[in-house]
Image 1 (cartoon, rainbow, N blue to C red):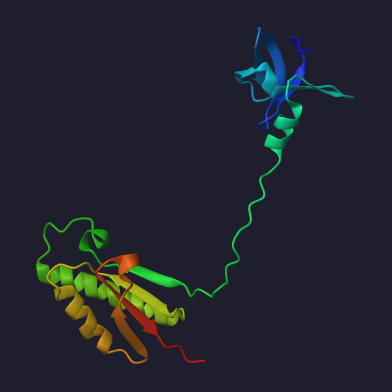
Image 2 (cartoon, rainbow, N blue to C red):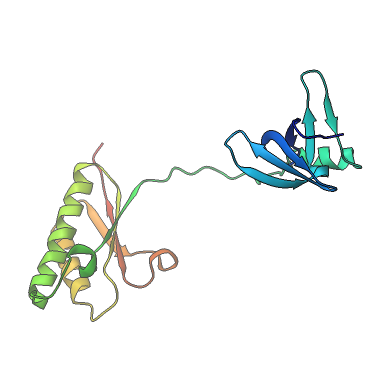
Length: 177
C-alpha cells in the first residue's frame, strides 16, 4: 500500500520522488527536482531500503515493457566517405544586401567565393567540392566552368540530382600522394 511520505519510482520512466498525496487511483509525486506530477497508482513502485513493492495487477506485462526491444539491424557494408565541401553560391547567402550591387559585381563576388573555397579545399587536401549555383540563366554556371578549366588535376561534372537538384556542379580534386 502506497501512503503519503513513501519514496517511489515510476515503472516506465527514470523518475523518483516522494508521495505528497494519494487519491483513489492516482498518486501525487514530488520529484527530486521539486516538480509535482500525477501518475496512476499502477505506474508507481514503492522503494524501501530492503524491499521493492509493486502495486500493479500485471507485473509480468510491466516488466516486459521495460525490457529493451532487440531489433536486428541489417548489416551494411561500410564505405569510406570522403568529406564533401558544399559551397552555396546564391548571392543572398554571400552578402547581406544586394541593393547597390550590379549584376557584374554579384557575379564577381560569387566567382571569388568559389575560387577561395576551391583553393581552400586543395590546400586541405579535400577530394570533393560541390558548388550550388542554382538553375537561372546559366551565366554563373558558365563562368564557374571557365574558372574550373584553368585548374590542373581536377575534373568537374553535374552533381547528384537527388542530393542537390539541377543547379549544382561537383568538382573532384586529384591529390598527389
